[in-house]
Amino acid sequence: MLNESFLSTAQLRSSVVSHAEVLGYTPRSQTSARATVNIAVNITAVDRPNLISLPEGTTFTSSIDGVTKTFRTLEEYTATDDGSGEYNFTTSTGTANIEIVEGTQRTKTFLVGDTTDGQIYVIPDNTMDTTTIKVDVYETASDAEPTDVYVNINRAVRINSTSKVYQIKEVPNGYHEIVFGDGSVLGAAPVAGNKLVVTYLSTSAEDGNGASTFIPTADLTVSVGGTDIEYPLLITTVSGSAGGSDKESISSIKQNAVIAFASQQRMVTALDYQAQILANYSEFVDDVIAWGGNQNQPPIYGRTYVSLKFIDGLTDDQKQTVKDQIVTNLTDNLAVMSIDTVFSDPTTAYLELKTFFNFDPDLTNLTVKSAQNTVSQTINSFFTTNLKRFNSVFRRSSLLTEIDKISPAILNSRTDVKVQLRVSVTAGTASDYTIFFPMRISEPLTTESVVTSSRFTYNGTTCIITNVLGSTVLRVVDLSGTTQITNIGSYTPSNGRVQLLSFNPSAVTGNELKISVIPANQSTIRPLRNYILDIDTGVSVSTAQIDYQNTLTTLTT
Image 1 (cartoon, one colour):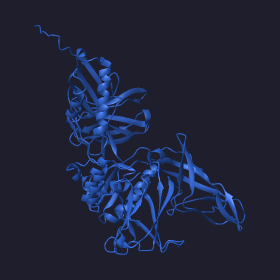
Image 2: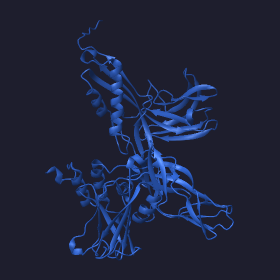
Image 3: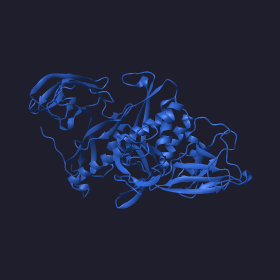
Image 4: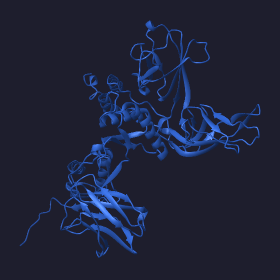
């Protein structure tokens, strides 16, 4: 009971949600998968209209793993005759990319009683996507048209006693409740006698992801020359469905609620940006980091840089839509004036790990091969659990502890660490390339190269880039070690910079060159800004050395 009284120790979802709401944070409900399509109609009649409309709620079906899912539009779109009878529907901003959302539309109606009755508006549906809620208020139960439309308080910038806003909160049984103000500071509430109609989408969450072909459930009715005629909708998929997710997890609520409380509904510090974006777009964004222009490389003042790690499955168009909405709905309203928001894509720094461990077969039934595979799997699991996010630090000792715990047969272990970045290069064109690593690079060594690259073709020969032993100068050598170019650039240990000058390979596999370096501190790799640490499983290896504990070793002179 004492544990449930605190956010950090609470285990029951109802307790965690309650503590989060005290901090002003609303946990995410299930969210619908969303797809982007182009919709057109072809009308060849001579007396065709100049402008036609696609109604809100137009539905489409798609099959995902043999199961039919329904998608629909959430607003009305218009199309203009292009002169040849083709109509392409566009949004209010003029783009032809139209979003359709997975889910079944449902409606819940309430009759508002006297305020002294303690009105409660709970929607008994735990599959509801709260971002699709529409709240209409009718003057009386018999009215056909609403008199007011209420909006989510999280989307409101200024609120007074007459504002038409509502709050949504999760109740202990997992359902959601609509809450209105009292007519003072949090807006006006519906009055006795009003009819309250709540429409929303009941979603299949993650099961709605992966749809790629969409079929209209009905033709579009268009009035041509005073006669209603049905025309088929022509659908072109721009991006398949993605973004569907289950309710926000308990661990995520615990993390985000504290950050959101610190931001206090404003965007001034870097943490404020992180909090507001996660609070409003966590169905699309898995992680976010922000930093001031003064911390950028190079420094550019008057900017806040934001890097978003999107959930898997989103297309470039969907990612751009989220970025545009963040600027329109958040930074333009909550950020400091004259501070521009600039998005910077995440940069993945891959670690190359050479792991060696002493292995005593007498202490286990594992074979050497099985032990090596188990160690590799443990390393991959360590990265999935502890890294692959912003601000996640690699600590070699923590990894080695996990390896040593696998089995008593693993007597000890060590790991050599390199950090790898990938740069897109244009074969056949001489260009300069500057690569910044998220840490200091080792000073030149006399026994091995600090900087190495993946293979590429130069003048018909397979080559790599390495630094000259004991020097920061970079050169091109073939696989036999013969130098092809004596100076192709250099690296700077202090700021992690690798610079290639007039680099002109004749061929590069996938047009991507991998540059690997030995970090100055292999024990701790702390990524900066928008860097994310991952592992290159293709070059990381685990090697066992047989070490029988019951064998005596003698040294001879």
